[in-house]
Length: 477
Ligand code: GLN
Image (cartoon, rainbow, N blue to C red):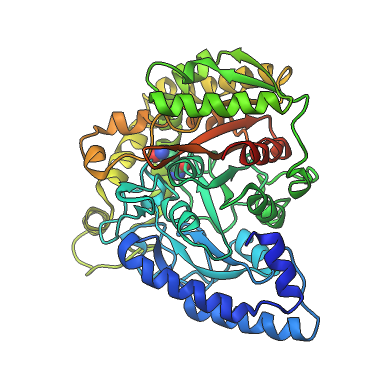
């Protein structure tokens, strides 16, 4: 059942929130043995929230957009009292003393927090295989030999797996919402940078991090976006602009919308079946009245990945400095000098990819290299934004596949070099670097595995993405 109907039934007293919560928690516990979608299941918290809601509903005192809806959150998003590790061993047993703004707002709208989902350590990956050294890799519910996609892998995986009413909060720095949405066959919307507060999110790269909704349908995602968006006095990069009519844009129709088809992302380098399914979806949209034209994003095609990996690793290397086993992070036996102690804690408790990124990022912002790498990347970032801005004068949105291939098998991922791993973000990196909102929705499946179509719109034009995404749901069967 979709969120809207579910909330109505809960309000009418036809569904007990406690019963539904019990059901979905048992499902999460049971399926976690095979699929590892959760790093933590917050049974106690969920049941107490559910009971409280049921009481209020009986007294007619309950309201909210997410009333009784089960919500999972990427491990990097703080939930008071629930182990929050960002997928890393270095934060083992860390229980935040406060809720992230998105957690607080969702709960205020009546959501029930069921747990923290699996992810690449601090978000460092495209397949959710770079998990912390003591953590498990989430598996794709359509084929457990394949990846969920990263880094919000558990959010995508469980959203696809469950038949109970559920939504999830993911986080994207360079594609981590769209990628798992594509590989798992769900909807995932990454909002404009600053639309949703990052307060209470464990930082990966502050100038790139965005929290966004994932779920079975575009409407569910739109409702969750409404609940979490908007200015937050505790987070200075949040935008004051009024919210769009997100859920009202569902099913609004797409007649007259102008879409640019990004020519670099079709053809060579993209799996033939993926290419075809996305092209078919575009043809169906044309029948609904969308106007299309082939366009080109040459600068983004060439530079978005190198720019992204320079900026994100530079910012990550400073953000991770605080996890030293003293101010933050798991403690060890205190011996030797501080440097020796920090080295021991960080060597033992960061995974290989986290270490690689700390080294890369530190290099990029070292004196002598800073101008050549980090600052130059920041300048090119402005050019990449301008390339988009020019196109958005003419187009409502741009379209491409989300990923160039279906969810890969773990044994295929094992063979990738780090550079090949990074290159798979070709289509999702550009909107992330530019802070542009984007949505991935299912466009059909190839060899039994889902294929995602990606729409990118101008800053703060999330409503158009919802319009387009819901149109795809209607025409693609
Ligand atoms: N794949 C990208 C990376 O490895 C994106 C991750 C993210 O968005 N958190 O950094």
